[in-house]
Length: 356
Ligand SMILES: [Zn+2]
Image (cartoon, rainbow, N blue to C red):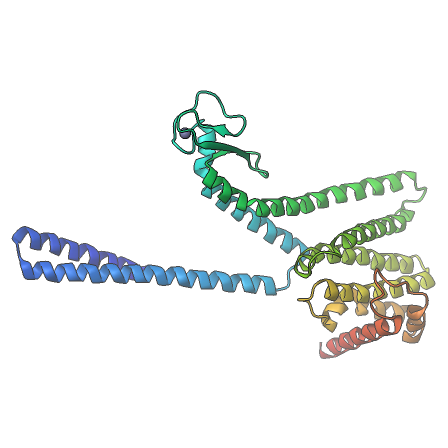
């Protein structure tokens, strides 16, 4: 900031000297101040360019850092929203003239005010050039474009569709929550004992999320690798949410004293956790299947705590785990291999506990 001011003062000073030299017809002062002015102007421009360049680099770094750091799904939604808003503003700024042509009923080619309000694309009665009427898909605001600008405007349409797609996802989330809550109130009003509501409710939520995720997965399965990686975020999130319900179900069963049911659900949930991680790796080639990531889907701490408290051994859990586990969506890996992953997460969990 200080440097910028100094260079501005130097430019002003050399301009004054130049004017002074011209007024007094002093040739050497003229030459000196003219050269100084040129040099200072060049320096100022260089500084500006360097700053623009540095800003670009720091923005890129920030973005890379953002994409690498672990974000929760809520953070991601927030990130998309901010990203969308800034892009929408940029898009609006680029075509702000074209919006005002419509508002003022002007031809975008010659600027003349038209007699009738334009309701569809047509030729200008004055300049005979084409006037194109477009409606912004997102804001429903109308704009008038020349033929050349129409091409530029339409180039942005892919991005506008993408934004609508993400907005739908975000809006749907609100809707899904409401539909769950009406199910909850329905169960609550018919149950004789309110304590019996929780288990069927969690079960309902889990199966809804599962079937949603499955439908989404079938939709993205034939996409290109890159598109699939992009879309898989929502699918995996949904499966993870569904799996959280399994862990909840196991906890409720345990709380109600149904130890055998709890054991079975924990084994199911752990199996699903491994399968979801593998699925994530397949759908998203940029993801590695690290034990620490799988651990987040298996929750070995919860399982160990349950086994310890209920008197089951790890062998009991293993036996249950290997029995009748249905392949999850795809036949990715065998039950035995899945069990190896669970053992890895348990080992990692125990190591981390020991260090604490
Ligand atoms: Zn015109």
